[in-house]
Length: 73
Image 1 (cartoon, rainbow, N blue to C red):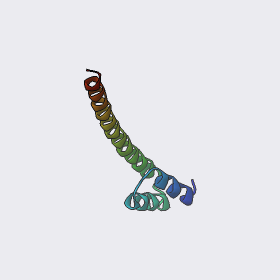
Image 2 (cartoon, rainbow, N blue to C red):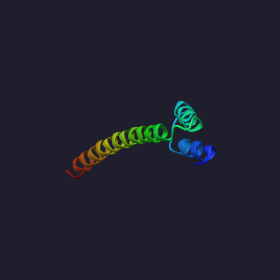
Image 3 (spheres, one colour):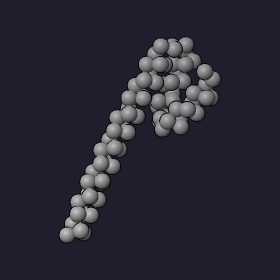
Image 4 (tube, one colour):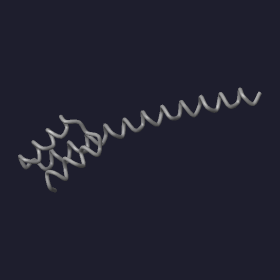
């Protein structure tokens, strides 16, 4: 994997400067297993954020349904 492509993808994934610094350090030092482990940790964080966002959407859907029911009455 090319360094620029890796950093571009991390940016596109929404990773911050600190995450990119860690990934770059692991990559440059040849710690491929640790880099993969780090990517997996970053992925888990993104999945957690996605789930939290979904919970917020679910709450909004609930409020919409409640408001619609009250409007129908």
